[in-house]
Length: 117
Image (tube, rainbow, N blue to C red; front, side, top):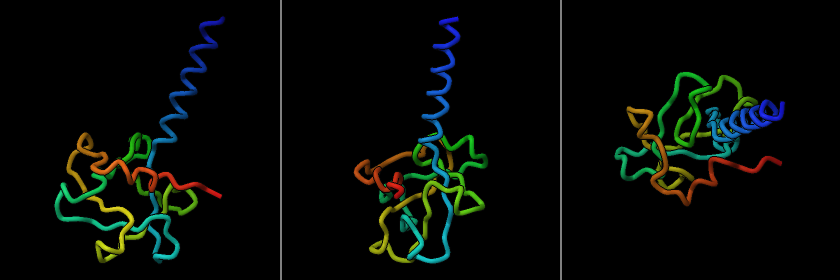
C-alpha cells in the first residue's frame, strides 16, 4: 500500500514537471500584445535559443521544443516576430532535429518563463 502511494506521488511529480517545461507558444498579431519579441537569425551560432517546432503538445518537454497552440489562452508565452535583430528580446534559430534544440545563451532563460500576474 505504501509503495503504491510513493509511486503515485512520483508519477504526479513527473507529469507536473513536464507540464512546467513545455513551451506552448502563440503568435500574436501586434507587438504590444506579446510577452516576447523574437527575431529569427540566419546562423545557429548567433541564436540565444535553438528551436525545434514539435507536431504534438506532448512532445514539447523542454526549452527549445515549441508547440504552436491555436488559441492565445492556451499559450505559456505569446510571441511576436520582429523585422530587426535590435528590436528582439530573444534571437532564435530553427534547427532540423529535436535533439539540437536548447539554449546557446542561458542568461536569457527567464524570458521564456514570464511571471503571470
